[in-house]
Image (tube, rainbow, N blue to C red; front, side, top):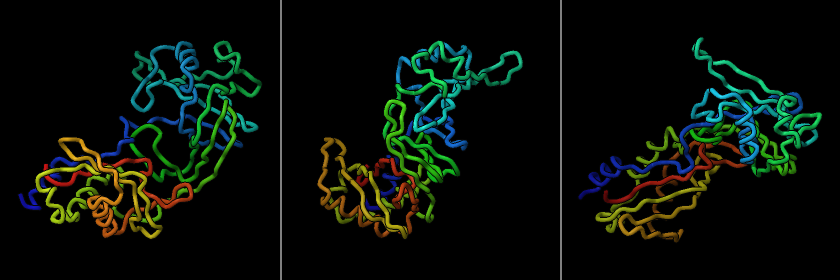
Length: 289
């Protein structure tokens, strides 16, 4: 089987995907900070099963649910004095007679009977909620993955919340630096085909009869669009043997192939130059189908 045939077979069976991808992007909650509205890329009301159960049973049935908002509601929050408070819940409802959607709002006072131990004069204090690396964003999207809260805005706060109180906070301004070969969901299939096309398959006779799947993550780029490095391992198809040596010739050749491709799409995210899908893990097949 010649190299062209191997390439076409690989293209037909590409396993190019991001392991972080889920079914769809989730609708963000809303949080107000110093009078400004931001997107809260998390759902604190889901942070405790007991809290969510109380809220779900309290809200009316017949809420509009979708893959982007399977709960049928969002939380509206405010940060006051470094604490996170729930100000209201907005439920998406459906009027069967009018065949249209509408919203119902439930403020903190109306939620007091079910969350009385968290009720304060500022709202419902989210003492049940803790999370590291929580992203609060606003502005245009710089990166977007069609799954969960995997997106980045032009301006972001990355915070640590412990028992409803912010204990750490970083403020970042993100941007797309340049266009090029991309690891975004929309473009990675094309990028993967080019990597396979340029990979020196003829240097590896063992790949004429066998196939490997190379898994990459933590991809780093230079500010001017050159591939720098990544973490990579590969698995032999058939016996599932894993090779984790970063100096294995196949991994070295793959990285050299990617270094020859230029330019790469670069985004400046949280103080680092990186790919447009920084949370992604990517798989590329090499060798015989």
